[in-house]
Length: 290
Image 1 (tube, rainbow, N blue to C red):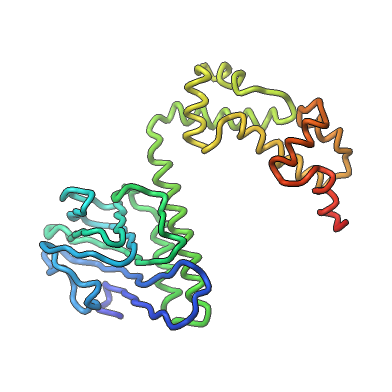
Image 2 (cartoon, rainbow, N blue to C red):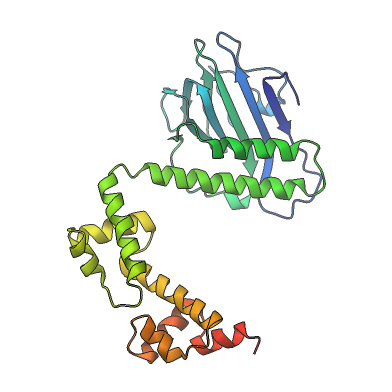
């Protein structure tokens, strides 16, 4: 559907078998000038709404205000102002309402989607402020481009771009939560130290001491940022390095264990199997097609 030069909207059919578990139902962009009527007309009945009554959708929607400002409310969020650079998440079965501010209007992208792969979105927040982000805009524009013409296989590509957008939004939300840049810098420094000392037996306690942090605080912050405790992070990097050495070198397994700071080959082999499901020897043979 093409309303005018400031609006691009697609409502997609589901006749083609998607094969994937994520379906993009609608994708669009609207540029609403100041003092214009809102919502715009011409949408299917299921998507139409009145600001005072609000509405409930059977799908997720992610809307991104790239210019202007407005108001938003839902079952979980009291009526509040939203500014340029705000993303708001609409959940299926949840009442909501929104509109641009009359004095500014707004420019807004949206995508509506459903499917089992998106039933448990990582974000629990309805509002996420990320500012103006070229990559986010590019992903919305890509979905509009892909949906134009509905060429064979376009649904699978749409699903892939949507998953990219969701992952990027999750990354931006988590990254924005780190306001203490000093702590963030120390965690980044710790990760660099781990990589530089991967062939030694550096301990998380030694890392905390080198960064002038208590071990308990360091461990908590490191886990919040990376999703892994420091010891788990070190182990994962060592096993990753072991896989590389087993694949591209002919180094004996005992030498690889010593290279990574493991004095006991039995301990190394047990740890490797626990992490990968195979022994180092089996992993090397698989790579050689044996």
